[in-house]
Image (spheres, one colour):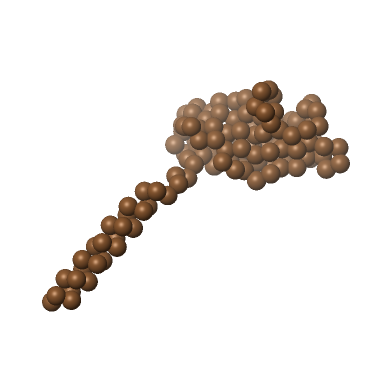
Length: 123
C-alpha cells in the first residue's frame, strides 16, 4: 500500500512538472504563409488565417525603409495574391507578414543570373 501511494505521488509530481514545462513552449503563429515562385519574376502568396485576425503583407527593402507593396487582410480566413516583381530593380527584398505582434519574413533575391530566389520563411 505504501508503495502504491509513493508511486501515485511520483506520477502526480511528474505530470505537474510536464504541464508547467509546456507553458514555456513557443506559440506557433496563427497564420500560415506559402510563397510560390512563378516564371518571369512573379510570386504567388497564399495565406491561411483561420482566426480571421488582421494581418498585413508587404514587400520591403532589406532595411525596412521603403515599402514596395502592402496589403491588409481583415476578417478573412484566406488570402491569395499574385505579385509582379518585374518593375523592382535587382536586389534583395523582404516579404513580411505581421499579425498580433508576430512577424514572419522571407528574403526575395532578384538578379539577372538566377532571375529570382526565395529563402525559407522565418520568424
